[in-house]
Length: 88
Image (cartoon, rainbow, N blue to C red; front, top):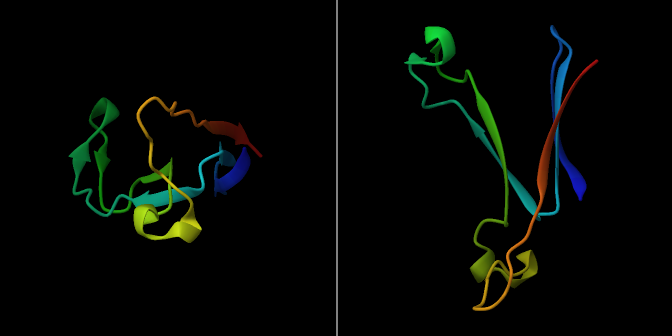
């Protein structure tokens, strides 16, 4: 496992650390949000969220230098990703 990302929010001191044994991490932003309702009817506008998803490198099947993402019959799929939350 390695640290793949650290996200912090300076005004509150909240920190999220993502560790994984997958080779890549995908970062999504809330660009598609448009006033959707969340918990307690809180409204979420564009860029109000983020997602960090561990994965294989994009286009791995066509790029040998990225390593294989192919799972063959009888093989086991096992990877670990942890999300740790703390405050500074």
